[in-house]
Length: 188
Length: 440
Image 1 (spheres, rainbow over the protein chains, first blue to last red):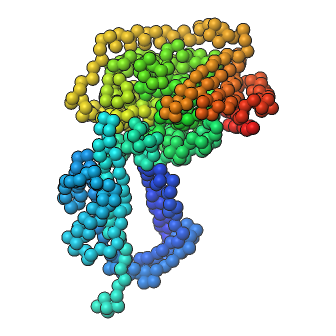
Image 2 (spheres, each protein chain N blue to C red; image 1 turned 180 degrees about the vertical axis):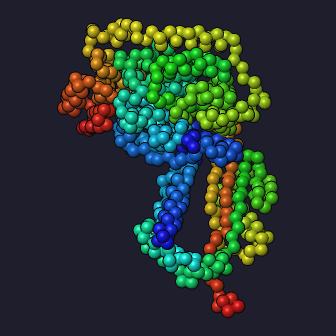
């Protein structure tokens, strides 16, 4: 009885894992670059944490035919992860040089682009990162070291038969990750 | 719940040239519209990824000169693969209907491809139709209704002599618009006479005219012919804001057209009013495909202009529909000897000049179709152009070819390979899905 309950649970778990990957792989992309360079997302290793990890980890690994790693202190690994997680924050920049507007909805920011002819992709990236630093500081994050442009699009704006400007749409993010917990904190 | 599968691939990083009307951002505003209206949150819609078409799949519909590598980019493979993915959704029974919003378009690409014509290089629909027939078998009857404002001359060329593909094209009269063809007298080859139906509409045709044609002519023809699948080549350039054409159709008109036609698969063709038309027309088509209410889809341009169809245009469309209806009904009584020389000669031959506006090439082609009483007849075509001046010869063995035509076509291929007059000889054996090639 217990065995068959465990089997059913493992099956559900594996189905959920597989459907998550299927969803990730089936996610629409809209550029050739993304379409052709779709990374292989399939897992090579199962990492287990949580109290039942030592009991179910090997079963899941066997069902998916993958090596399994049970984290040390797996029962409390979630809590350790929460404590070590580095805070992150992101924003979206939308600029239209034809309308001369720049906006960052997360910050409630609307600005005029004063020299639209000079506002190019490099400038858009620089503004997004500069504003992200400001935004992070406002949110109480320590000065972020690593920031990335995580998505970027730009298009011509055509009126009649003439290009009258460019639209930029960027997402910038403080790189998420884990920080090292120092010995002192451990003692506390 | 089965609904509408959407294969959306706007290829934001591909264009012919940056200032070309078939431009990178052509489907940008459509994407924004679909997102903002929350279309994909409705249970009726699901979005799918396209796939790359294989060159083998392209060769079923095309002979590339000098070869496939000279012209085809990955974007063309994704557009054609998007159409195939849409067809598979319907054939696999995953979705009730499917819509491929992909670019670049394809309906001006003919059997021979020396370069781009009318912004098209690979005929997405034809590649898809060949894929469908490959899955369903040679007896499948497929109707293509091309509602792009330009004549679907490429698709017409590929299926001109094919009795299992009905090609109906509604378009602005060829005397007033590219590509300058698509007249009522172009009715198909000796093996498929009457199965090419051209409906050249006068400039200024609006919703009323287009819907009149659909109700009084296209639907009765489809009802009569009973296709297994209906495919809509949905160009959106009949819209009153389109910069390249002169029609007066609105998003409501397109949505109603889709509702009447009930196509199994929709493949996007042209449409260059990227802000004024495409977002609303695409939305209307998608809602109509799913059987949802589209009455509130109103393009902002209607606040400034009121599209209007004159009485003269209405009268002229009514006359045309009457004539074409009669031609359809009497297609079996046509005197094929007078048209094609049945009984007098073994081959029907035509010689054509084909202009490639996008690539700036002129092709000359001599095309002979074997007049056969028991099948559509094998074809021999010799093509040259001012870009590729050497001769390329193609021997085409159609679906449902009779044993005698097969034997003759195989002998002709051998003979042309040995004669050495052509630089390249291609044998398209459609029933066996085999392409043979000889290059000198």
